[in-house]
Length: 275
Image (cartoon, rainbow, N blue to C red; front, top):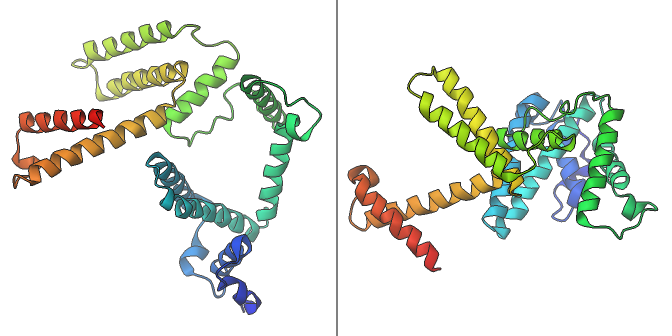
């Protein structure tokens, strides 16, 4: 039978983190909890965790500060959910999660929590951070340079991490112009062979092109995921302007010609530049 002594906490409006923890435990109670929550596993919840992280990023990208609190709450709940499932399985609990992160942050900031000088550049701090992380990976038994770059990361982000890790050991083009040359080479290969390659081979060539694009972004100091999200938002904004303009004429995109929509796109683009 579920312990009801925490009802005041669960139904209290200002219970903070302990309230959320109590709610999560109640949801996972094997006798009186929610059937859906009880049957979930790490694998079934993981996609929701990824989705919530992207929604946080989306709110930040749109500067929707009124929404950010709720999106961060959704993401926080995911951490509580995974921690509760781990506790149910006897693996670890939420306090262990917090302690692990606290230990990591203290160890990775010796210039704040240790005896190292805080008087160093951001570049030097980043280099020190990577040195500490490399030591952590070695302690975990990682042998290859790329061993622990997570496979489940978004492809562009993983490409960046693979390239950064390889660059640390000297496997990198020293000049951005060399990356641009490689980009042109890959684009030319794809263009020239697109009519003769199989779909599988085209996918392989397209992957090479995207990988070089990620490399170029890294050399230019740009996050390719953020850049593409920005362009996605731009496309959505401008296409919505096309739809709105057509609606004033009693038309929809499918009722219009490409020339009409191109003209409206150019108008939307010009209007943005005037702001």
